Length: 121
Image 1: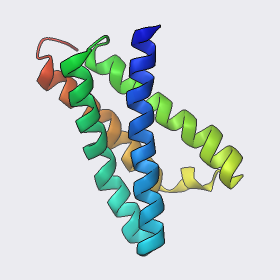
Image 2 (image 1 turned 45 degrees about the vertical axis):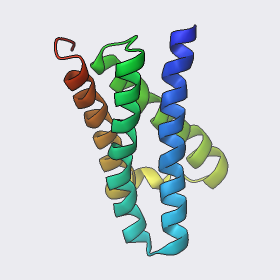
Image 3 (image 1 turned 90 degrees about the horizontal axis):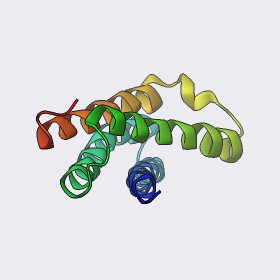
Image 4 (image 1 turned 180 degrees about the vertical axis):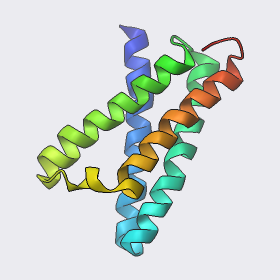
């Protein structure tokens, strides 16, 4: 139970930082620039969180951790952001706004895990 809470806490912090980046970006710049900032910031945030997770806890393999992090992020975006807040699933039609950050979150988490735990998959 403790390991699940730690993984979910890391995923939540990553999602919250991404939400802040996109929210602040929309408030201070154009939509395109905000989406680019989000796409660049997302893997940076999750790389730092992954580094912390794998150095201190490493309850799961890099592949499983990447799946948990992206699964949490997609679920919260789907249910909370698109389903409840926006009441519109149009955000999932944006490659730059949604799919590129999702892929980069997964890849960065997995890559950091492999760097910190070289023998792990």
